[in-house]
Length: 143
Image 1 (cartoon, rainbow, N blue to C red):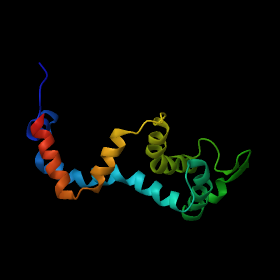
Image 2: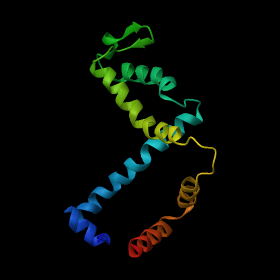
Image 3: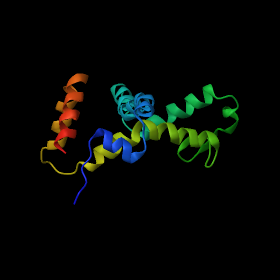
């Protein structure tokens, strides 16, 4: 028989106290929304993918990290820090934080059918914080 959880039972099963969760929750909320928010800001100024954003990130790191300019090299794909370099890893990390979730989401939608989940999620985003909490509470009670 499948075990059902409510919020308290789930936290207990995972070994998380309410106090711990309340401390961690703001960071999780930030992480959950951060990459999409950052990507949306770049898309508004015409930077819609990693390839377009890469030169900006390279320049940014060269400008703000002391010593980074010394590692710049002209390669086949333009100016870069070179493979395996710590600055190149930072470029990859920054680009991944901004674009990985957004690009994975856009690639997964392959059919021309209306996406019911996407429509529901759009409606979910329009809810106020209190409506979202109420919905979550009702969902937990239903399970």
